[in-house]
Image (tube, rainbow, N blue to C red; front, side):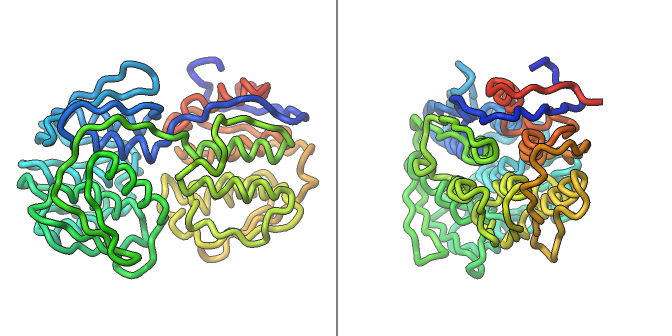
Length: 422
């Protein structure tokens, strides 16, 4: 691909099955968990198979601001050396639009003896964080967020309180993960409990618990929605990051749409990330189910929705209300851009999305300039439409650097032609 990327890319439909071997990048979700836990652990940890992208680079930079040594010996490895205690930074931590990093650090900086401001860009400043701030306050931690969104100011005392903290996780499972990862720094055992049973994406909490245990945490599950975490701190570990399942959804989508075969070097069943559930749904194309519950594979929904446009029957996506508070309102963005390809292709109904499928779209020329809203997943998903329809142009293709910097190179490697759009 011609670097730097042009302001727009027009995709040429390949009109043949796309096959080959692709190594997806490492999981963003797991890389950011491992980076933080290694920074909180005494000693030197090696994180292999890691993702180097905008979000993880911002996380690493913030950790360096807090006295942690983060080295990068090669493109997929971080070496993290820490005293086991974060130090107060001299400047606010700036985390761009990285939701995981912002929320994880808002809790983790409470383990610092000193004042820390956790902030992001104008998009991040519109993403809710109040439930996490209130949970920190309930542990006796001095935290405030005047707008209910970043910036968050935390005045830490070096410990994370003790006792029971309850969190409403319906807006984001990241709040639960943030509290759990800081909990080993409690003055005593910390119990993290869900308020109600509704949780954004349950599988991500399981990713958090697995990573914490790899760094020596002692966690006991109390019933379905509560965990008791002992005040052990963390110890350095060598940690292998699995490939990113959300990134893999684009490859499974390419296989389904073009009838190709792409070897990812790992089977769908081998993933522990929730978005891997999308593979079984994409494998049913062109007979995808009439109703798809996206609640446990939220980042896969844009991929599934674009593929659904070519399905034999309409598809209704339910359980996706949280998509309204992602990098952009993804329900609205997906509906808008599908309708840009052809009016009436998608409709929002409350917090649900209906995609009016039409297999006859494939092979047509329907010029469309796809707005990406600074959102990597909108850009990558709608590129799949461009494999089937002529004239699809993706604006701001560089936004994929958030999680998949090599995305366009990957398509080129599969034999897809792209031209600078206008």
